[in-house]
Length: 285
Image 1 (cartoon, rainbow, N blue to C red):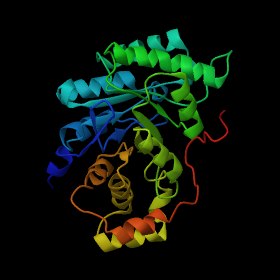
Image 2 (cartoon, helix red, strand yellow):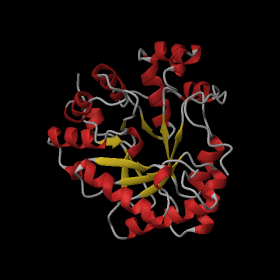
Image 3 (tube, one colour):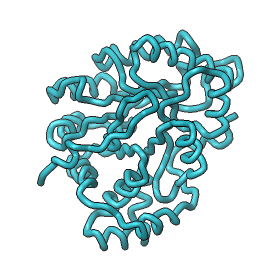
Image 4 (cartoon, rainbow, N blue to C red):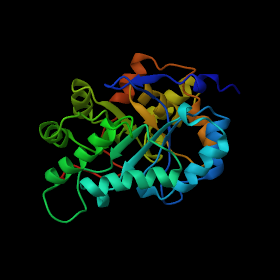
């Protein structure tokens, strides 16, 4: 099986001119990390975009896997995330440098605030987000981090950040799959020049048994997972499926050799029922 299509993974331009690969491999805690799977994805599947977070507790292991792969750091896109327990100006800067040290890298391509609510005592969430963002802005301006962004932020969080700070986030990473389509948020991000990135593209497998997904999969002779990932990418969303199984990673990578017809894109676009498989930031002020 040829992986040339993955090696030639399309890229999405950020507002600062950098290009983020539209397909990446997510990692997670709770059994969501496999050293062999990471090395396999990098060396055999041509994956060049890895997403992680301090919260996942696998930074050191991930660094080892990247070094073992032998792939030059400059050929990889590495995203990491700042946990809300490290929000605040000094804490955020220290956490960033600690994460770089743990992974054995000098910089991250993208660093995200993981959640709009602070776990630090004192001050409102808005104040803490602004203070934390100023630290990320400095890391970015100093060239220590190539791009900065947020995760799980809604329109009102982004509006406040825009009022309080200088650099508009380059990326907003949010849950996105056929059953959860925050189109108003996507429209806002694109209007503001913020690249929209989607996690949990398979809805933690809940989307894979949907009759419409199954019907489209049969039509294209692809798996339901490939249909969900292809739909997300074809909507222009940077997509980061997670898996610890080599077979699944290989399957998830095979999404560049076909295209969904407009009618099928529309049918999948009608599946939104507000299903969430992760945290819900709706009530975070």
